[in-house]
Image 1 (spheres, helix red, strand yellow):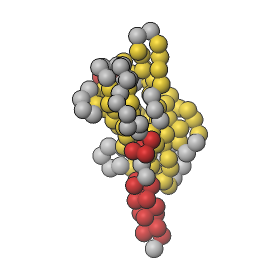
Image 2 (image 1 turned 60 degrees about the horizontal axis):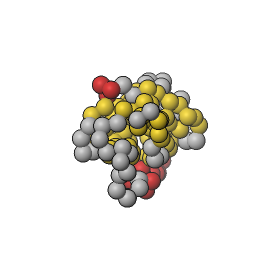
Image 3 (image 1 turned 90 degrees about the horizontal axis):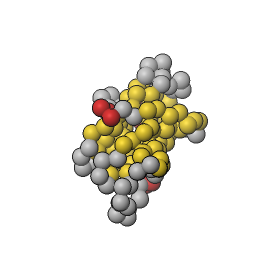
Image 4 (image 1 turned 180 degrees about the vertical axis):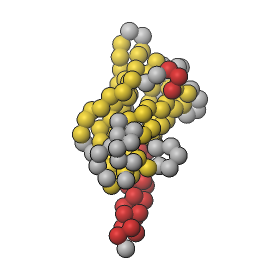
Length: 135
């Protein structure tokens, strides 16, 4: 019975994922807009083990992404450099970041924004949020 409650909570959180925070207007010149995030493979983060997060985005041109910053259930920011080799441009594009091991078990909310270069200025994207399940 407890397992069913946990699974239902995860399904509800998943349904209310990052789409709600994504602006719908057309991209501004040079803009980078985050669309969503996920944990590849199993979809689960394991306590004490670093885990990858894949962030999808839409971009005008090919911006240089400087770093991605995360809040885990309100704690943070925890910022990580985004290496050019971890960025794939496309429709949508994506980048992968390996996060430090998680310490809390259960379903948490992960918020993310990215910083990118536009000319000589560093700009910040919109914030997306999505649930992560940790064991």
